[in-house]
Length: 103
Image (cartoon, rainbow, N blue to C red):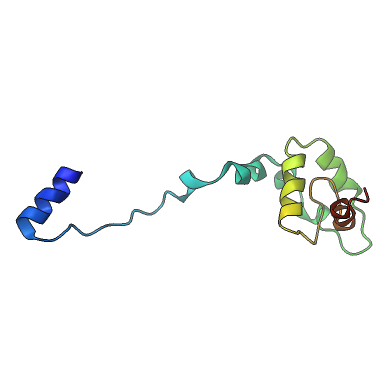
């Protein structure tokens, strides 16, 4: 590559223009983001994980119990201050308590 650039400068007096290649964003996904693809909730009804106020969280928590990425999910919710829904098997109130060290 350097040799090609040197030849370009030598023959034209300018550097070659840079080109941007697109469509490869998926190659740069971080491992931290890949857990979401393996989450059981990605294969179920999202309404179970975001119940109406006073609605049951039982089904979502049951699904979380068997999920291999439950810990990553909870870490994500805590790091991103998720305020709604069931993440890592915990409700928003339970996550708030966990952050305060009450749980």
